[in-house]
Length: 267
Image (cartoon, rainbow, N blue to C red; front, side, top):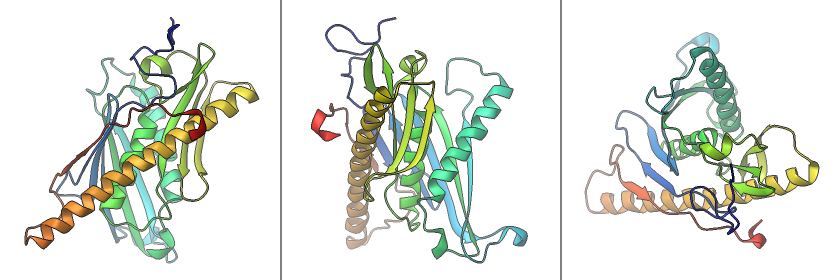
């Protein structure tokens, strides 16, 4: 299969360094302290945060920091194929650990001793990049819940097919068998890498190119999320100023298109 045409277009019409369209909707669940629906192309993830709150079990209480609990799941209708449970369970465990480890490096747990934060992420529709979408959705939900964090955390993946570095792989590209690098960074701390996962072996030169492209994608995702959070905050402030209830559950849609191609000097 040809993943990049002679004209330089991918299967979905994007350029190699172009993100899929990003969308975000905040405060979508009135029962959660923070929630977000995040979309990267056709991949859609719902995240909900409960806490900070007292630990449910005294035996798990940590007097120096908060405990982060994370649960990842894929809705049965998220893909068009029926998944074998054993394989799905192993993958769910791996992705849960990746999400939790990333968020533990982001949340200022030392400011919340003897407490716990529960984070739930569910993939509603999968078309590649689910790990990245889950991390981005969880960050937005944590921000809505006013959980103190060290920095924005943004995740994006890049791969290498047809001798070309590709940003933000969809399912067809991800299944192409080429190297795939998943990255999450703290952009305000010199792009500090807090997650790095790689599928398949790749030459050093190729890895550096793919890694730089993934980090550039993370920065673009971070800019998008900052913009949505700023719009959300302004909407809440305006609602309060007008004497309206600007609390959770407003479901204010924060959508935008970030499908622009990254130029070479952007990474």
